[in-house]
Image (cartoon, rainbow, N blue to C red; front, side, top):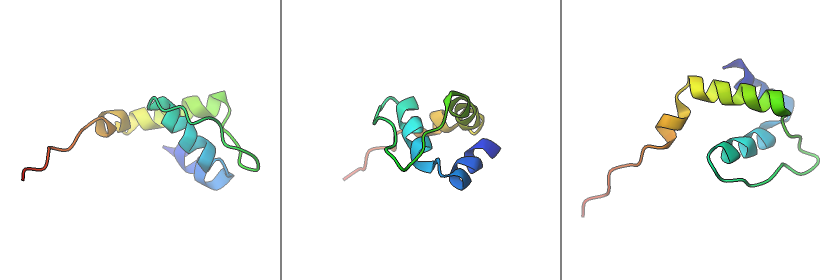
Length: 68
């Protein structure tokens, strides 16, 4: 999961967050300048890290409805 940490330290956080949103099916577009966007290889590495931590399975869980 080293790639994920690199985004925090490289100024790519916003671009990586937007890439993650796109992976989740919500395309919010690229980050605007002066923010940077990850390149294709970085997005693939981010995706591999996220899959390794089982994020997509976790994020698709829905909480039980609140019983009132």
